[in-house]
Length: 62
Image (cartoon, rainbow, N blue to C red; front, top):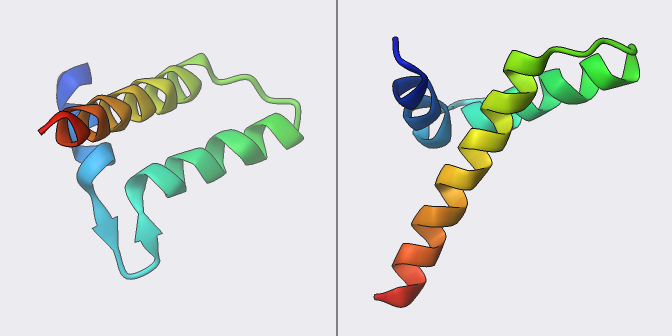
């Protein structure tokens, strides 16, 4: 799966317990609390947030 596909799936995915974005954010948060740095997860979260912000901006412009 490409990085762009990962971003898109996480940005739009949701289940009974919440969104995929929130799940990823919780992982990154718990890693931070434990002193673990996972650049891939952190970068992925930033990319998902940027994707969602771009969608929101695009919708607001319409």
